[in-house]
Amino acid sequence: MDNRHASRRYERLYYVLSKRMERRSLKLITALLILLVFYQLLLLVPNMKKNMTSIDRLEGTPIQMQTVHEQ
Image (cartoon, rainbow, N blue to C red):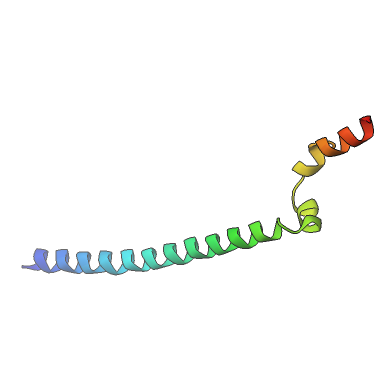
């Protein structure tokens, strides 16, 4: 009888803790998705993109600019 009570208590404790962790995980995932969307929206602004990423500086001159200078 004592063993059964301990088992039920353990199951309830596990259920409560797993529900808490599930809620926290969902909140974290939601917050990360919101931050990702916000970051992507900031990358649409040319001046912000220049400050936030380094890949544009490494790409070189655009093709349109090369064809204009060659003529």
